[in-house]
Image (tube, rainbow, N blue to C red; front, side):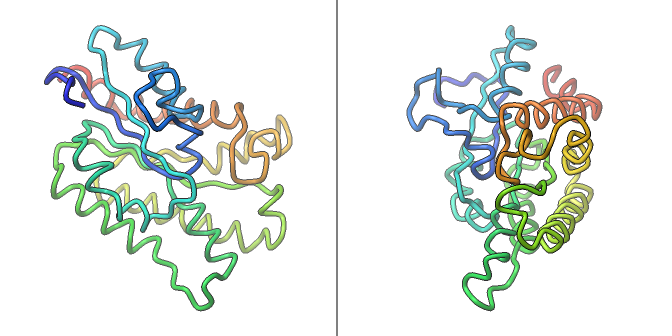
Length: 225
């Protein structure tokens, strides 16, 4: 990050395994972004705004819940000083509750997410926020107790939407996009285990992100400032 100039915009992707995408943990530019939707978005925007040489960073970590993000937020978000911060989180919070481990655990998704966003706005008031709706489809891991899975993710989606409004973030709806996609191909084609996207699933996320964020005017504001 020491080579970043004042003119270069930093776009940071945060989340769990869906964002992680097997990203490299060194400086090899061929692998540093992994193979998730973050890579696809960076490819598109990096090409479009090549003259400004934007910096794209992926700090997704497989298995993370919102509380895990917060535990590493200073190092993996605040210190990077992103101009745009994109977050996709929630399915592991749901998974932990669905597994009921540990017994009697409380659901901290909303509380932890709000705390994380509040601190981010306080420390990085000019950073633009993009919050992605968590999603699932009925396949593999989610087939058992499907109704409960869907109810929980729908609740998390509503919370994410409300937090977007509360903190002035762009909200990217994804559940309805995946639901609609199952009219073209079955659930496993998009999310092979009901949670983790295939190549086509990651493309769906990237296209939805680009469409919504561009329509919001955030990209024009970011790259013209």
